[in-house]
Length: 329
Image (cartoon, one colour):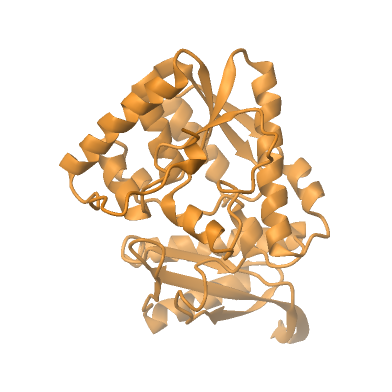
């Protein structure tokens, strides 16, 4: 059966315990061995919970047949590429290939404002990078992905294209391996802990495949992208300091391309605004707005407007899902 035809059973019991997770792990290991045989598998390893759980499952099932590729597309959070290499290559002893494709991705995205087009360019370029890496290796026939059930549902409903679901070229050279395809995000975390992955990895902030590209609405420019990266780093630092890191499911900043008038150093400053998004969710299908203490937001605003070049004001997004999605694009 084609992996893209696999559906979540209507009567499937929600995975909430180590026992249910272990049953799922055992089933998937058997299925992976049956599908892959003695061939090699290429995995896009972002370091997020989905790809990390897929990596752990594949390592248990096929060991050194797995080749992990970490692509730095220039749209990652501050310090993230270095952290991924440290954790996976040095601590987990993964067979990891690091590819810096920053210029390649940003050149492809130059002048592209439509969010769906941006997502498809990023997804398509990912596949091209993997194909190039595969050609350097021997026996690569499979591409593993961290696609989860909400990705499939949102793609089918036409809400947004996912680089892990439906945005792949039809002439793709690889057969897909998607062991967590039928799971919701909370189930992926239970499976990850049962596999023995570090707690901070399993509960790491969710991060979209297109990265900061969807948090830089409109055509991406390097200076605005850097404003997103720096403001996001400040937000994450302050949430950690104030004990909000594990209380709020997802939090990040967005820097739209429109500008507003402000005042800096007694002079007119026509700069971008920074939008803070903080939501709570269990299954990603519904999200509520997190309650952030006023004094914390005042301090975050002060830091961002004084430390991040090009930003003169900070806004807070009070929109739940629905009507909004978690991400802006």
